[in-house]
Image (cartoon, rainbow, N blue to C red; front, side, top):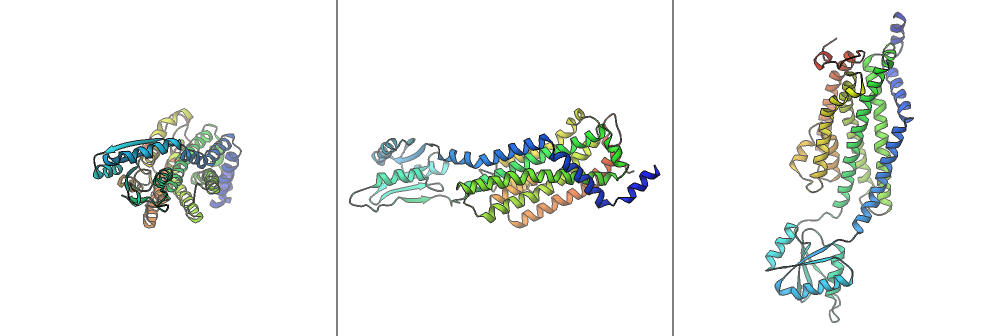
Length: 387
């Protein structure tokens, strides 16, 4: 016993943490599960811009509204669309006000009228290229060769909005997947060491908080690799095939902020996952503790994928981006969409980091009081008792 205490005193805190983190890295990097997950994620994010390109290039139905007075003009558009093998749907409205209302509601893509100077169209944000080509062909006239399609947009258009949405979804998906997988990796690792009694050997040399910190840091590096590798590959492919025209600095900036949020979010969740793992002795007992921990992650992802792409300025998403348990998913997405100012990023990041520091104290106490106890699940009240 004395020799164990003497050995513990000979190891500095930083050295102990480095030893545990290094051991965790070696074990995880050799794991087939890690390599398989990394490969699948990398392939998915390499394929994402390619799939997006093919999806955008696929045929879509052009929906055009005309007034009753312009039915013949509308039929000409339909005939030319047929010759070009374009899908086309014509809607006849009673007057111009009804046509503009159809565009504003999203029922049609374009309200078109024929004037002496060519086609005049009203669109919600921008005129799709296939429709622009179609209108230009119909407008061709031998005596007036320079006719141009006159476009009126009801809303200001961001030409890079689609790319921003793609980057935002990729950032949110990466964060959701990695926090979920590496967080559970921490909990399962604690249970494995506890059930195999390895933790008893480790704690004969180092302190519980050193073991906890080293384990969290080691797994964090694994998570960062799972984030950076697919992210860099996805950006590279997207820029190479022309899918991403946003600046390189903006793309790298989004990835860097996502990495910063991963560090804050993982620290927050890793403390909770590790504490949960220390409270049980069997993997099958871990499920009941994991469900409430991952619920905020699921909620954040549901809001992120169902609300933000269609409504980047959503008030609900903005509020949840300041809540530490959902901020790691939502705030990077809002930043990628260009709707989160820098001060919001910094304030939310500070709140998340502060809560992580608070949870460190409680998670450390739970870990210290529970990790050496085997058998039944340790009650939370008992695990939180001061030593």
